[in-house]
Length: 304
Image: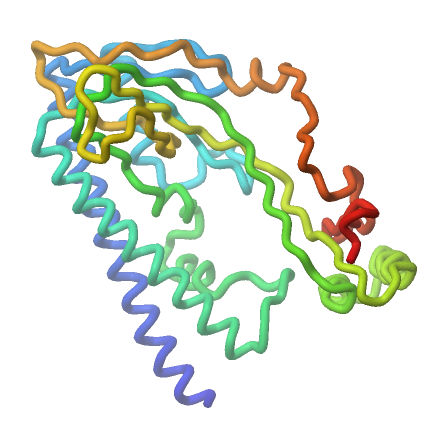
């Protein structure tokens, strides 16, 4: 098994390297083409994701091209922070085909990266929260230790059919996974023999056997673009479509056209100050029962 894994590992290292080089080459070419659009003074509008400030013209193009090309961690960027930039860029038709090609390269890199980690996890016998992913170690050996994987493989979003209005908004999604008490114990034990682990296991033993628990991944803000058609509907027939908008959306345009109306955008800092109403369909307690592994109890009516 070990010899077979070593052979596979070498092949996967080669594929990961080739996929990354293809992505970097495609991204460089894509940025050159975007610079031509900027030089031709095609319309561009972006928003500062924190303050909501609208930026247009050359400044918008400069910042958009920089953000699209940023696939490594910045000097002041937090370990789990993802750089986002909502906006709309007017581009020539050939740019859309180039975006498809770049997205294919991004998908190849993502699949190669995940394949390395999946295989190494299977050989090791499961996930280890304290172990660095195998693909990360390979990237370090390639001199790409600062590569931001999510920023590298996230897609370039483009719209071929011009909407009548565009808006951007923040959304929050929280993932809740139903697990058993036994699995929660194993998750805690992976953190070693510490007082925190002992306390976590003590609390878990207070739970009646058979009661389900909820592992909650806290919500992270995501940017969405809301596209609206009023006059002529797109091929899908939908009047409203939502798309992810971590990066500026590309829209076919020429120098004689302007962008569709864009609704005011409320930055993340301003959005955080808005008081949210509590949802009526909540099934999980607000406070974690075992904070070490982000495990909550269900409300009494849902503990069966």
